[in-house]
Length: 390
Image (cartoon, rainbow, N blue to C red; front, side, top):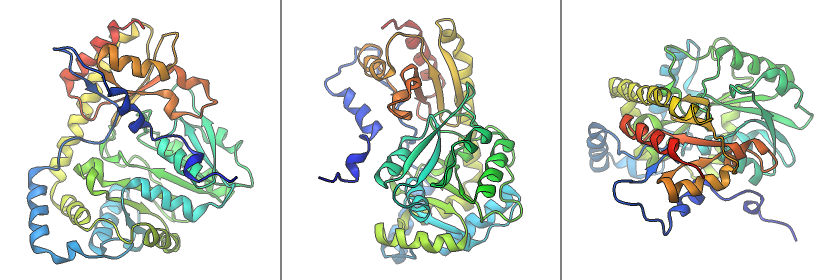
């Protein structure tokens, strides 16, 4: 009997982790520290919500089907701002708006891959990427990274076969937090171009990169023969529930993307698109402040990590919304993570969720998502971790 597509992959990790909370009570004075998920928990800023309320009442188009590839004004705004930010030439017809960045990845893979094709993912990987590949009948080929979690194109070259259709990178990285050097991205672009495969670059966290200026120059010159960029408005403007993302690719590829999107959602969320457009035009200063807050939390991780270093922990990566740690215990992180919920009031994700089951390195790793914990909470987090002895 054949298996269903969904049975080919693992359960959603964040949902699985939430079930660890069932039946657990936390003692007074030790509230749960939830560092399991990167999605902002706060609502969009008040000015944006006021504009969204106005749109709901006054803009009839916000309640109707719209263009499959997204609002023309939003596509044009992304093209203009991206061209300026990256020093490249990006047209509106090279932009499609999607129902979140996960859908952008799914759409890209659907235009690239057939049954039994292969996509190379650096490990640790973003688990939803691996899940979609599983459900698409596409083989995930893990690319090991070194202690700095930075993948190398020279290593990826050894993994390319006649079935390889793409290499997918995430920078700033989820789960590792590391920001890939510009030269690393150039090396991967050149490799992909020379082998006739696509480079998928997920820049969901680009707004929180610690580096000033463009993180790469991949959009300079002709780029759309190889590069497919993915983006999410959810992190920048707290629009998680409205599901608005983007894919930047050749107009020919977007014609194929349109088939996928029309079949799955028909059009992206209309209210969310209008909010994203308004945010791009009006919230630049506010977003800069959000970036500084995230960078301060990153600094807090670095400030407090010596408490754990003394206990044998290692900080593998830190940036954007994430810190990726190696623990010193003789216990798999798959067991340590639920133990931390009960015994330390910490909900985090084990490294086993970010690697194939056959990869032993995940057993010694955990991911901390610090998007929703401020500097005092980060201090408390590290105090608790420094005291544990499972």
